[in-house]
Image (spheres, rainbow, N blue to C red):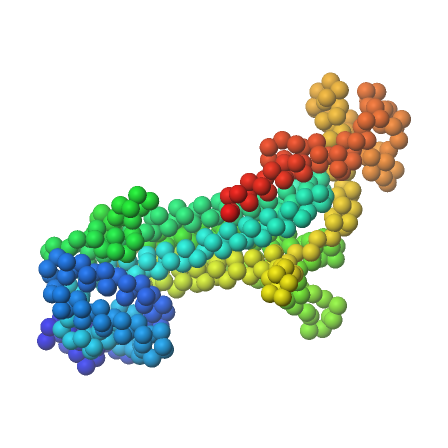
Length: 483
């Protein structure tokens, strides 16, 4: 019996073995029930490989036609839910190959010429991940757009800016939201970079050492769209590396972890802002839940769960790094464990991005064409909170510096002024001019402009600052960039 044939146990290597695989081992080593999601990538890679084999004269035109016909039927069966996935066949690759051979006979057996499951699975995972990245990048764009939409409506809304969760300086709420736009824009950039390194072809590396057949690997790369921005084919240049490394999956999971960290930080702020102690924002009821015992509560379950799922994704990153750290070249069965954490990372990130796009930006009402829901801002509560904690103290120090006082001296002077305001239970802007002049004689009536929240905001009119004019400039930049 040929090693390319399947016996009654449907094992591709059974002629070498004197006893069948135990049922326990079969269940332990099988991956078909989670790697079957790679079926489209597996079929695409197989068709590109078959077309190249025919072009190189390794298989005949009739065999190619049979393979194409068989793969078309398998595609229809899988899409219709009629394909029988068999545990005995271990993985997605052997399941599809066995069904192809059942449909088209020897032509199906010739498909595996010049390749191994090692380079086949490496190719499949890269193709699948590339297509997922192509879905994630637009979702990051949508989330940025939703944040920009909310920001544009709240340019003049004053929010207390915090450091150490202490009131620090007043900022525009729009400016605060645009900080997350910057984070998510870098996340998108990272995804583009990861895609470029993912989009390289291992197929043709065979088991580990290459193959004796005259393969045209660059032709396969072109067929599968594994090309750079100039259209040049991107092929793994070392067969050992091509079949064995999963750094592209680790890199993606690292990029996904950073994105989830940014989502988690935003989630934490939403959770704080929604609490009664802050009362800065509301989100639509459909993103909250109630309490089983306390009828007055609306719990921010979506942001809380996103915060929790961040730990899950970061855990997958640690798992993948640990998976690879002790592996000698080349392929090892350990690498079967790369798929579930990678799959779950992709699913978690996509689901989280989709729900945050709607939670932030709202849902389009088809009847009115207007987005409804999303973040509702309590501008009054934000501004009242900004009046606490002497948020314009730095502005008074800057005012004194412009009057000629060294900054360190100005800093000390303002500290005394704040102490006086605390003792009088009032804001700096509420201290009489005579009291302020008692700390420094150069203080004049115009000081009250710089001590106002609005004046503080407008004064920070430098690139990247929180002044409304600068915020509007950044919104316009983001609009152009995301268009």
